[in-house]
Image 1 (cartoon, helix red, strand yellow):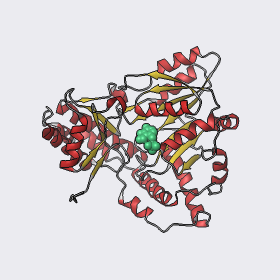
Image 2 (spheres, protein in one colour):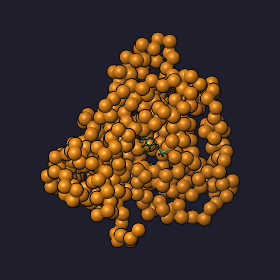
Image 3 (cartoon, protein in one colour):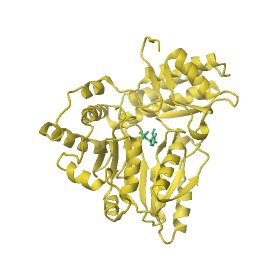
Image 4 (cartoon, protein in one colour):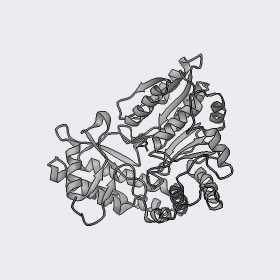
Length: 398
Ligand SMILES: Cc1ncc(COP(=O)(O)O)c(C=O)c1O
């Protein structure tokens, strides 16, 4: 491959750009994971993570991608043949459901058109009908990375409570944690699944489970086979700052730095920043005359926007042109959205000028690919970012 001057624009919805501070923190000699320096690091990050999950409960760290943490959430809490209710919000929900099927669980999949989130009324109706309490868990993807739709968790929790149903609530926050408001404790979530490579601004390789007391109790009865993913040994070791097997030591240096950065900016400011960039991106898409895939304004994702291309224009052709001409990677359409959407990631280590550069690349790409549009998206985004209300929000103190 020919050298391309200037920095590659990695604007897929994760893995995200890793800030220099985090890269430098990772760039350390390998350490003894049974020594005192590691112990102090582990205790610090295990405690610090709780702030990001907004929990007082333990958080488990796996040397694994998000898929591992999905599996951990299921195998620690459930037994073979037990029923799990899931929502088909998009490709990631579909993959999690397939995993549950493969593990020997009985899944029920509530369909959507992939343009909206999980529906609380449907959940309540289904749980009320389950008078024998056969459904043991409800599993939801908070931010569906394939569609750019954020399901609202508090109404789902309220639906479970109104139905007086004892099912556990399992939530995937792989592409929302550390970017979009999320409260493990206040929202009554039993297991939160997350990964390192998106809002936490780390390379791929770590994933997490935040675990409620109710989920820890369920784990004592759960019969699905588990070894590597077992919370029990992990939590027993973690309380002393150890791991039952070799942890991803250098990524934990990076995690410590990323947690410090989120704390310095202030989590609420991080959420606000993502809101501003989500809003400006959507205004750009409308100004181009294109369509945002998400149909429900209250469910717009602030970490990514999936954009529909006109029917006879292949979104992957546009992505290819943008990569070749402007050295920028955008997210591809996944599953049944292949070729129909491209996804703009606006999460992680990302600011106003990163957004304008990103949207500039898309606008030039649309012109180069001959996709009919108005050349007004970048201007609309700049107008959005410089509105007095948007600027005022940005200046809020950490
Ligand atoms: C919402 C969501 N869940 C789960 C996953 C799977 O995580 P991983 O690819 O890290 O295994 C992803 C990956 O992008 C995701 O976006």
